[in-house]
Image (cartoon, rainbow, N blue to C red; front, side):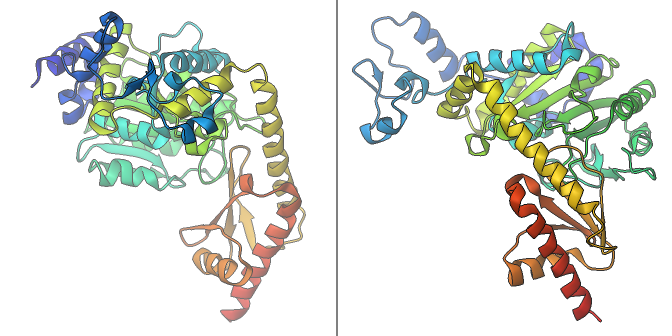
Length: 434
């Protein structure tokens, strides 16, 4: 094993042996090179005042070389903030700004030790880093039966982990914390579990209430006290889009200090929160451990980044940073939030109006981009195809009964027509099946 990897492992094991035991074989072997091109280039950037012939970019007239046809569209930005490579950990100013934003929006983080966010190429990349660092073949990854399908690819197919699902809702149509607890305690023999907590949930648009949040934390604590090392990952892709009396913070803060056997990891980003999907700017943050632990985990994270994408795109990091620093940012974000909330409320009004009879019910939703219909008598895929072929309407079929509708991308004035059309498609399929 490389001595740098061994040094990081020693630090992690000394700080918390439970976290060391959570690491995958790759997680134990990975490290960020201290003597490689990047580290030497960083040193030269500080000391090479005359000529810096280290990094693989081109310089002209003291600035990164660029094409005028591109710079003309980006004239508001200094070439050094868009053309140079961003550091593997991300633009330092952006990391600091995002950390400040996290603390402002999650007061439960006050007084907690947590690391500096590392920039990822959006949230999928962040989750992939978690999988690489902590998931070996046969390790168990736990998430609810209403989930983002990419989890299976990221943890199951790529890393060979065993997927364990539990029902998202209990009989009272609240979050099924008992199901989560049961799935966790079933791993006592393995002694390790990775838990994915995605709120607002994709595909249902559900976020638990405060009491449910406490129950989730208690379930994870119970598993830890039973001897299970838990990698607790909050997938906060849609963070902040809370439209009702649900949790208003990430569970990351509460999980950060719940138990020594729990490693809390927050994966979030500007992608959905700031409506910049194509910018691909995400973050991964570690909490609940010592500064030395955070540093070691971040170095391993940088090793994964270096070995895969090398570093994230610089222009989009600069764009997001400028937005976060703008005095108009909060007002503009609030404006978009209210539009999204109004759309969600309109959907709920339509579904509660009785106009659609008993052809479907809907899963509780109170946040995010989506909601899910549960079709009572028709097959979701057949309805999806009917909507697409006959009416030019796109939806997502999930399993036999569930139809996901992204109200986020439909103007409020068109929502009534959308659901009326879905109702027509259900009726069409019902008639044709008789």
